[in-house]
Each structure stands twice: as C-alpha cells, then as structure tokens.
Length: 191
Image 1 (cartoon, helix red, strand yellow):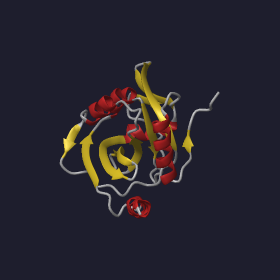
Image 2 (image 1 turned 120 degrees about the vertical axis):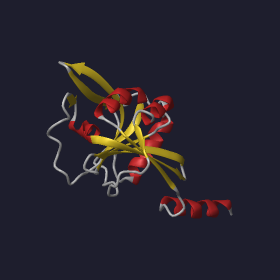
Image 3 (image 1 turned 90 degrees about the vertical axis):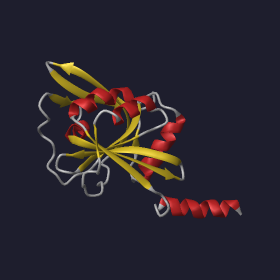
C-alpha cells in the first residue's frame, strides 16, 4: 500500500507538479565569484548552452583556465533557487549575464562547504526582483568540480579540477541531477 502511494507521489514530484520553487537574486561581479568559488569545495557545475556568441573576450583583468568556466565571468546576477524534490531539498545557483541569459548553473552537494555557500550568497547586493531571463537552456556538460583561483602577471585566473575526493552521497546526487538533465556526469579517471 505505501509502495504505490510513494510511486504516485514520486511521479507527481518528478514532473514538477507539486514542487514549489523558491528564488532570490543578487547582483555580483567577477571579483565576487573568483573570491568565493574556491572555498565552496565540491559543486556540480553545468555550463549552459547558449545562442549568444561565444565569449572571446574576458572581463578586463580576468582569465579562465578552461573555456567551460568562461560563463562564470559573464555572470552579473546570481539567482538562488531551492526546491523540495523526491530526493530531498535541492539548492542551486543560476548565473545570469548582463544580457539576461542564463549561462551557468551550480548545485549544492553534501560535500560542498555550506558556510562558504552562504558566504557566496551574501557577497552581492540583494535585488527585490529576479532579472528577467528566459528559462535556462539545456546544460552542455555536468562536472563535479573544485574551483581554484590565482594571480598571474597581474590577472586573476579562475580554474577548476574534477573533484577527486567526494563522498558516495555527493556522487549519487550529482549523478541523479545529471541524468535528469540527460547528461553523463564527468568524473575523474580512477587510477
């Protein structure tokens, strides 16, 4: 009896019919992100596909180690979203560019440093209304990353590596989110 009820509830939750989505927004700069991202620890990072021209020019004074990180430097707003799903609470950040395009998404994982996540969410200026943006496009990839930043020749460089030390709980959750987005989860080669 409980099994059938659970499956019915699960089907309703997966399609989104019964889930409430809560959102908050804040204005940020590339300096904010580069300062706060390395402290997060492991996050699920998804650069989003875009119809906009590829970023060839970085904001002045910034570089990225990989082009998949370039959308983070385009972010001028962070839209923090949370939702209760069948797997429990889920929280993520949509990065929105100056031209109101969703360009990247980061998910909070059990291995993420929750205090650093809260510090990131407190780094910008809260805005009363979320910036108007079209629904987020499909993700281009899904990676469990750990960010790092360094100064090089007077420039701030943002980089990341695949998360090598992660719990089974984080891997499972990241895998479920990636499957929901119809993407394979990129994990480091085991050696």
